[in-house]
Image 1 (cartoon, rainbow, N blue to C red):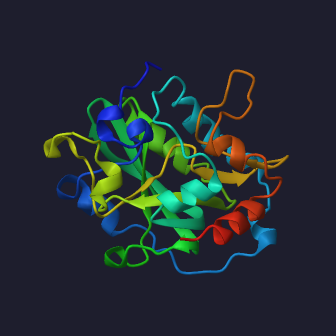
Image 2: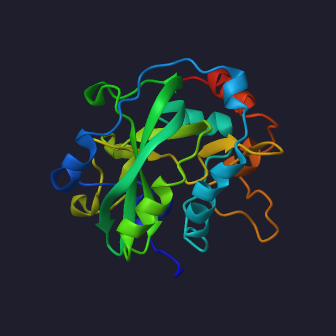
Length: 238
């Protein structure tokens, strides 16, 4: 995959952005994230087949130019509008920004660990992620949908309606792709699941040896259990 120059969007890897005027209809019928309280046992379940969903997504980000990640879990919690533990309920194509296709991931079974969901969105939690090349997007979305993960993830999210974090300093307002109907990840490193040997950041690139990259990824992956990250987030609330 060619290196994606996405700094113009202000979010790491320009990862999550959409236009309400163009794509609002895409999220109206998304699954509703009914409030829940998930147990540590549920968070810590590892489903090996979930890698079939996450691995291709991470591969598409290899070589992408990313902004500096938060230093650790506590810093990411402070940067986020809301941090949730949730399952993925559905995935769909969202829009093309430049030459980058984005996806909308609908979260369900949401447990708010820190912050608050944006009131104007009710219980709908739709997160935009960069996919990469727009070619064959329908086929790619169907492939992802066929292997939706069963396990929980912890998501550090910003509401895109908060223009301060999603707009690059000095950027023209016309370059701001934020969509107030959606959330964005604080950084591509700001999502964790339970792996076989500990918590993992499954949707971002790692180093050449498969080790953790400095910053949030390294801090989150030092935890042996996803529930330990949840505890850290709760202890780091604003």
